[in-house]
Length: 84
Image 1 (cartoon, rainbow, N blue to C red):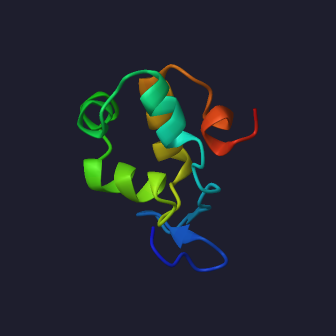
Image 2: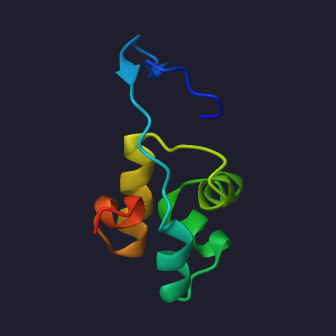
């Protein structure tokens, strides 16, 4: 979701998808669990390139993507967002 417009994006049905804040704790949580980007990608179904972009704070994730990553890491999405 590079360069997200202020109002978010449209999904396939024309509904709005609001990007979640940057996943500022993703790399820390992943490393604490001894997981590589490739392994997290395989467990979550999110591409390794996207995970790298999220960790380097180059992109924002859709809420569904944040939930997939959190589930694969065994944490609540809020922990990845720095809200815990």
